[in-house]
Figure 1 (cartoon, one colour):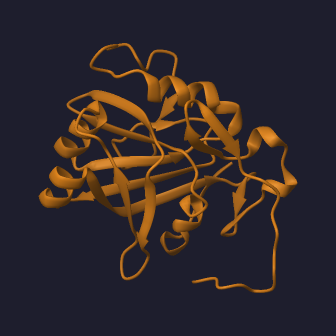
Figure 2: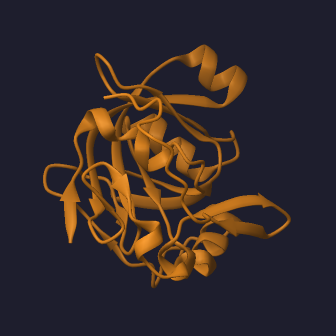
Figure 3: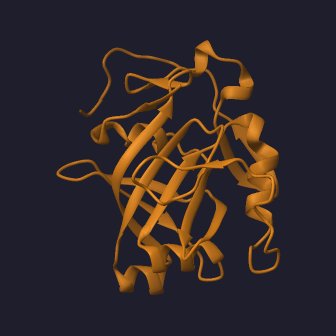
Length: 192
């Protein structure tokens, strides 16, 4: 069910503003956190994205040390998991990931959360000014996969799936929205 996505189409997984999960690993220590501020930055000549990681985030340290991180797109049926991963720090709860279904893709030592709609593995492009002054991290997209039941051939299939398969969109104070019904108008302004 997990299918590769071309790097020049990775942005379609995050372009609709979904809440994400960010994971990283260094020296055998794994962590996953929830994040809402993730944005596509570029797709040519190399695919890139940005993510905001607060200085207090344990995952940030792992990203800085390992130089790798993953962005995952969770779905409605994972909302409790998203709340748990965003509401507890590994600094305070070392067993935070107990019971969280993680897996690894070949050639990448970055933990991925099972059951998501998509997974994007990135290599950190260090920029100390951005990181220190704005908590902004830039990642070069190395590899991308999606659950083909939800995202296939560069397109979301939300209208074909039940509500539990839709992506989450965090507002504030524990309030989420799930992506709504699609509306297609001609060819649009699509890029490659």
